[in-house]
Image (cartoon, rainbow, N blue to C red; front, side):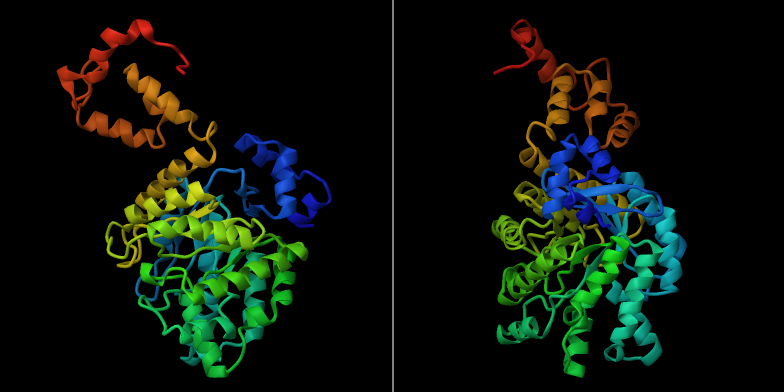
Amino acid sequence: MTELEIAKAGQISPAVKNIAQEEGVSPEVLRQKVSSGEVVIIKARQSGKAVGVGSILRTKVNASIGTSSLVCDLEFEKRKARLAEETGADTLMELSAAGDIDQIRREIINTVSLPVGNVPLYQAFCETIRKYQDPTKLDPEYLFDLIERQCADGIAFMAIHCGINLFTMERLKKQGYRYGGLVSKGGSLMAQWMVKNNRENPLYEQFDRLLGILKKYDTVLSLGNGLRAGAIHDSLDRAQIAELLINCELAELAREAGCQVMVEGPGHVPLDEIEASVLLAKKMSGGAPYYMLGPLPSDVGAPFDHITAAIGAAISAKAGADLICYVTPAEHLSLPNEEDVVIGVKAARLAVHVGDIVKRRGVADLKDKQASKDRRDLKWNKVFESLLFPEDARRLVEERKSLEKRRCSMCGDLCALEQAELVFKDYLRENKK
């Protein structure tokens, strides 16, 4: 039985029990959310680690790694995977598109304890191009066999592009294409395949077959955003909304079949449309967990798009997004290196915490309150304990020899907190109104 089927049967699985304890929620309430499809349980079969994604839980962060045809180094990717986990990523996506992809996938899965996801179309088109020098010769039978092989290897969740089909392709044509083009690798290659073969997307056409494979392994279906906007001026256009509508219908079919499912969100979204994007997807999908790619509220931030995306991620988390895919400083410019991965994970973790302060007020903001009180009282060691990145903070203080007695080098003798303490210490209450 899948986690969804177990929950629907009224049973609390060990994974649900553990996640409830970690997140400070009722196991029964969490079971109900899994049963309704508002929460998915993504399980790493290689380690037994389970991650809950969805409403009532903290917003999770995904880190992506993987080879390209220009940079293909397995040990490099393994180092990035380990760093992503050490820095606090909740899930990992292995997105290799070069090298021995089967070997890379298996080694990456065994390198981390995190649930690992992927995009099956990458390997499918990569190997088709190697064999025929033409992506449009992709054999649908090979594609479904590959998906099963990847699930059997331990892939915990899959981004699958079902919503880019003949109907949504027509919307893209009739609206005059796009300012930012089609930025999904899997989506653009599937578009070529459909046009050249004059056939429907097999992942959409044989959706029941796809669900059967994923359900067998309890691999979570992440309905891919193949028509996501690659420019803020393309956000919420007809093609994107058409794909979202189809994906939300497919999410309902997946739940009915007992398959856990998430819906993916758009890439580039202006600030005033982020909340609408989340609410629209949540409402149309029946509250399915929303996996937000970025989002980036500007197109001109490179090489600081980890900051651009952090702004969007904070608003997304506040609005109800459940899983955020990190963006690194290398976005739009290069394959990320180890430093990029660390920076990307940290930026995303901080961003989702900012959103969770509002979404989970009274839970997510407790460390902020404690850090503020300890900072007021100049209790530096206690402050470090409450920070998201205590090691980085301690290292900065030590390297710059910033602390002298109670004061840091920012204010020195003019320490505002120390001076104010002389005036207000007798009025201090533990819990002010």
